[in-house]
Image (cartoon, rainbow, N blue to C red; front, side):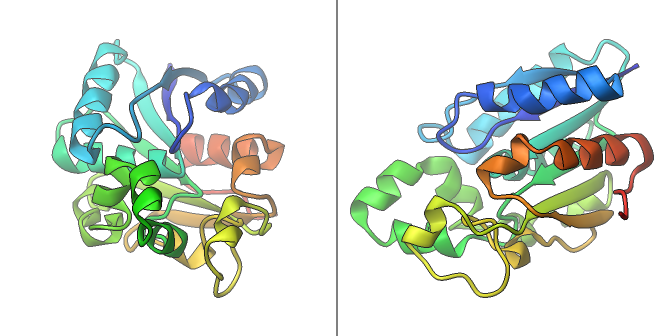
Length: 214
């Protein structure tokens, strides 16, 4: 049996990941649970501890994987970095700013922007991005990364992207040394969790450790 813990992004309650969970359950037979955390109030490490506890509670002898959207991908990597014994086999980061985020950095230069971004972004995106500390994770777990290429998102309002992006995160910002696989899908940042093609790619990686080439 396989089960997945879904980790939402910044400012989201977690319900948006229900679309992806339903697709994987209905069309791919992969069960899942929605994890929710205080993305603005909690620090990255505090939220990583919450996720670690949530994962342990839902293990039940099953093969367990993690899927995170945007900040959720950074968070799941942080949890795996802090908990070497976490019972996780594979992880998928969807539209996650693993090398930092130009949009978040530009927004954080404003006092109000820094406030709404919150503590977890300050720790793991504008502070020390995952590319600086996630090497221990890719050495222990298979990590797959999905990036969007339709530039329709709030990030365009605060910054200018170099190269393709999903409108919030640049494709170049999703790269991570040591990751098992990386694939791009033609959708926006918010559309990543609603996309049928993304769901198919997530299912492929969770089952086989690699994405589809179509």
